[in-house]
Length: 275
Image (cartoon, rainbow, N blue to C red; front, side, top):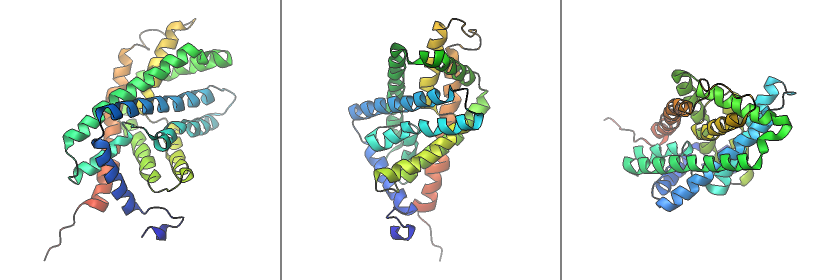
């Protein structure tokens, strides 16, 4: 059936089968494997965020070019997750498809999410420490450091509703990128289909909880070192929770409901035939 799509790609129905089978495998990975792969994913997304910040700190670029180029290079993070292999909380929202089809228990989904979310956070913080120690933010006359502080300040003060709906839109695009990557048979296939959705969500300014685990702590730490720090009222550690709570809820809704459950209903849900 896949040949009708050309280029030897898997069809959408075949993608649904693959995503479900992968979900079963992910749900039953050992704690050690999940934790280590989750730590890698947090680090990979942080490296993509580092690349993004480097680009948008260049004030010679117009707004549109900053967003476009920044979003494109941010794709590095998910490309490494998909190609090198890692466990990313937002992408693993697709496990809901295997649960909805009765292939795994919901407690297995929760186990995966809790371990992966925690280890993603650890991986992101590990890169934060490396970036601080490397003095990377001092590049371009500390324009990079100032950009991190600005990003952290903006994210920490988002209204709950804005962060929630931005999180929904973000993870619809992230999970579609992961979904479409399953259509490809080669590395280049997977890279191409990842770049466009990820660059779109980044350019549009949507909220990704794992990226924010890197952006916000790093911005706070750099602000403490700044010659003219931003006031504590607008940049406080409580802002991390203020951001992550609505963004995580939005990411879960976008990935689990608007992608995983929608495709489950389309391709996997049994259709009753009335007499």
